[in-house]
Image (cartoon, rainbow, N blue to C red; front, top):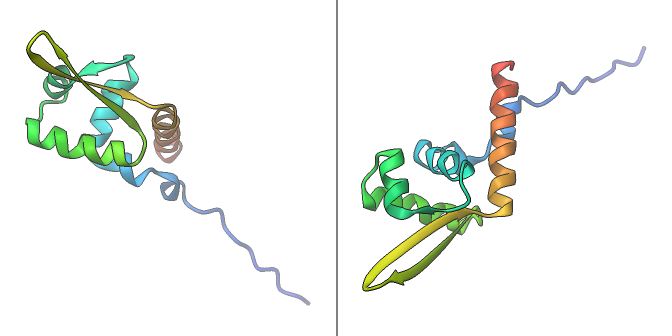
Length: 105
């Protein structure tokens, strides 16, 4: 008799985004998923982090292609706005779906 080797399905956790799994980046994506664009200051206040922490995590998300950062001036004041890209939105939705699958919901 020939023994059948079964390959069990890989656990869904392997499908989680390493980029979005980090708590601050997860919070950024969650906040941005609910709006078209968000000012740096509003995003910082919404997720309750310092400017330096937010800047560092935005850089990681931008490098991954998940967000666009636009810098402009409103009068004499600099204004930074952030939005999810199409690939960022797709990654966010996939990450959430995987979390729901793991949680059994």
